Image (cartoon, rainbow, N blue to C red; front, side):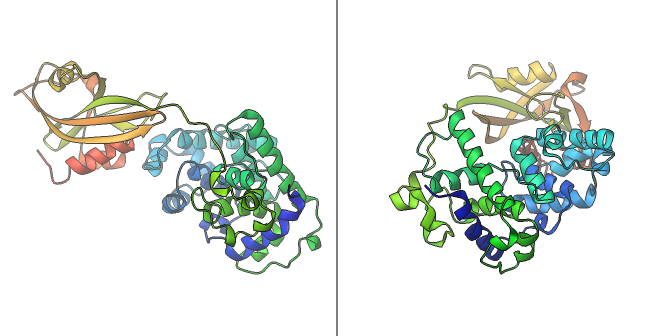
Amino acid sequence: MPKPAELVPPLLAWFAANARDLPWRRTRDPYAIWVSEVMLQQTQVRTVVPYWERWLRELPTVEALARAPLDRVFKLWEGLGYYTRARNLQRAAQVIVREHGGRFPRRFEDVLTLPGVGRYTAGAICSLAFNEPTPVLDGNVTRVLARVFGLRDDIRQPTVREHLWNLAGQLVNAVATRPKRGLAPRFRGRWARRVASRPCGALNEALMELGAAICTPRTPRCEECPVERNCVARRDGIAAELPRKNPAGSTRLQRVQAFLCMRRGRTLVRQRPASGVNAHLWELPNCAVTAEVSPLAAARELLGAGVLKVRHVMRVQHTITQSRIALDVYRIEFAPFARVPRAAGRWATRTALSRRAFAAAHRRILDHTTRGSSS
């Protein structure tokens, strides 16, 4: 079993020379680091970069985020999904302004109390911004640690999960308790100064970067790994088999019908409730259906008896948590002078549609169906 202290020097040296140039690595601002960490949850780096840059241009401080209209926050987030993250960012910013005078808290315990901030995010912020010896454990770090230390049990088990947190803590503590001159070899490369000045954060980043670039889920490039000689999975030839997870529960299919209603250049849309999936976001009128419900009957139930015809336009398939959703879109033709119930939604111009944040599937529908349409 490798000793955590033995892993620190090669990990830091590798990170100094090989880390990707990501914009949030060029700052010590805890606010900017926090935003990047939240955006990176469930989202790939290449997707996040332009979102993060635009967010920091539009909302450069905690105070700016705290006072921004919620619609603006969601619009800046549109396309990243999991919109609760954006709502919690603003709630946490408001807490920071109210309880910390607008200054991002430095103590791990204080960061952990912020809305939407869990153990991983708090550890990442404190280590990257303040060089505190707080561990991180995301999917990449889990994979690296499971392989290096040869953990063969299901990583979803609470006891295994806590063991992984303990290993991550031992690694970052090995940095914090070791004199800087003991971190030989000397660091070389673009990020050498960062590693020397913030070794706790750099160690956490090295683990995340290693999992993203080298210790990948499939076909890990073990021969390029800085801790290859210390890795139990490499030694035993089981790197591709780890980490182990028991099969997740099966997904269920849900059928949804959405209705595209257009009049004189306006489109009927509605806003989702303040709680639940995609809270506050906009969408086309829609309803979940069973196979027995006809689109015409569903449309009349939702939009009134004035619905004359329905025409199938497209199908969008997507997944939310453990539900596979088949979303069928129908263009609605109303009878002359038909009235749509107020509860069905609001009529919005193209300009209004462009300014509102829509659930991802509904934005795809609008982009596809309203292009070039004005009827």
